[in-house]
Amino acid sequence: MIRKTAIIIGASSDIGIATAKKFAKKGYNLALTYNSHNVNFEKELDLDKDIQIKTYKLNLLEDHQVESFFDAVKLDFQYFDTLVYCSGVAQKRKLIFDVSNEEIDTLFEVNLKSAIKAIREFTKLTINKNPSNVVLVGSFVEKNGCSCESVYTSTKSGLTGLCKSLATELGSLDIRCNVVAPGFIDTKMNNNLNQEEKQEVAEMTPLKRLGTVEDIASAIYFFSSEDASFITGQTLYVDGGLILD
Image (cartoon, rainbow, N blue to C red; front, side):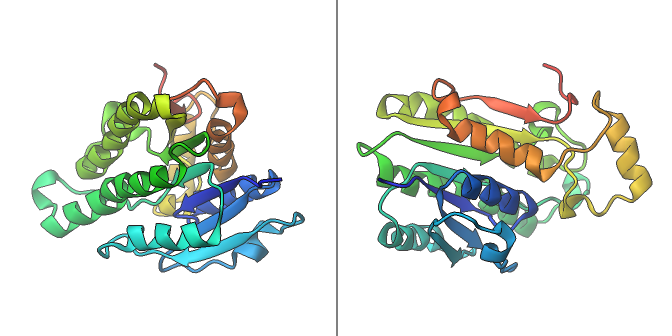
C-alpha cells in the first residue's frame, strides 16, 4: 500500500510542529524542514505508527535552496499528496517610512516568494501522477489590513491571490490549493504580549479565547483530507470569529 506523504515547510515553528503531529497521527510519511531551530521531531511527535520521517535544513533566504530541497525529497520519497507552507517571519511594528529594504526583501522572500517556488517544485512532483493539494498558512490581517505591519500584510495578502489563481490554473490537473488564515494564536510569535494584553485580545473574539496551534493544525489537515475534496481556492479564517464575513 502506498503511504501518503506530506511536505511541511516551516515544520519547526509552533504551528508546524502541531501540523506534523496531526499528519503523523493520520499515518502520513513526513518531509519536514527547519532552519535555525532544529527540533527533535521524533520526540516531539511521540510516534506510535510505522511512518517515515525525514528532516531537512532549509534556509529560504539562500538562493536555490528550495529547488535543492525538493531534489532531495524526490530521492527520499516516492509519493506526494500534500504541501503545507507555514514558514513565515513577522514584521516589527513600525510605520512604512521606517521599513528598510532588507526588511522588505526578507518578508517577501520568506512569506511569499519561497511559497511560490515551493509550489512550483511540488507540482512538478505530482502533476499527472496523483491528486494532491497545497495548504498555505496566511493570516487574518490580509482581510482588513494591519497598521504598522503593512509589508507583512502585503505578503499574506499575496498568498490569498496566489491561492485563487492556482485553484483555477491547477484544478483540471487534480491539484487543490487553499489558505488557512490564523487569528491570534497562542504561539511564541505572540510572546511580545503580556498576559493582560493576551486577555484583552481574547476578549475581542466572540469565543473569548486565543486560538491554539491544534486549532490551526486541524484546519490544515481538513483542507488536505478527502472531506475537502471539492474545496479549492478558499481562505478559511481560524480566528474565533474575529473576522465575520
